Image (cartoon, rainbow, N blue to C red; front, side, top):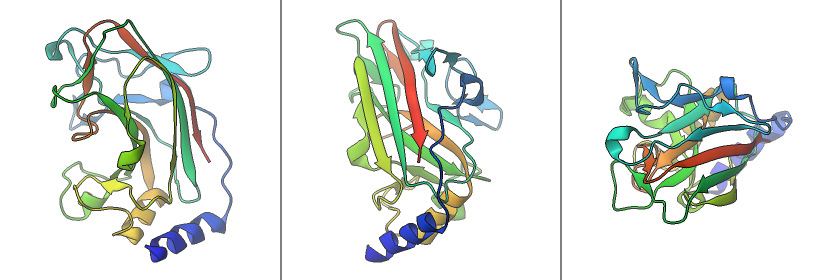
Length: 214
């Protein structure tokens, strides 16, 4: 574990990284799009621009009406980044449920994710270490109101797409993924299936207020 912290700290110390402002809505993709198929069923390809960030409406009523999975952009290398801070607002009337389309008995969640360039989405062989999901303690249930999450990139509890593999177990693979990042952003699903999609049971919206990489 100490080795993991030392390795990431060395990478962060090599050069500083300035905080990045939230990219405009057109730079974000609602997906993922894998071999031509967009898994965010009945969603636009990009969120709507707002005064401070961007927004989208959750598909509502039933699973068949659609679901949102990933909302990401290309940040370039994250080699020298130390944390990601997010502020967002959810608007929904009282009693609205946010339902994971694969785990409908669980609460819907939102969390952070990044992906190494060149991933083929198979999660096999070396690609098992190309997608990383934020530590479990940072996952948030989707609920009305303004929320904030801050996730450190030197936290050894980041988990790979293959369950049970943590960044602290494979520090060099994690560092290479940071250095060669191609997507970063938010994933919607459940604690059991982070990016497998969420819909709402009534009209509801998600607005990103700030997305800062430091």
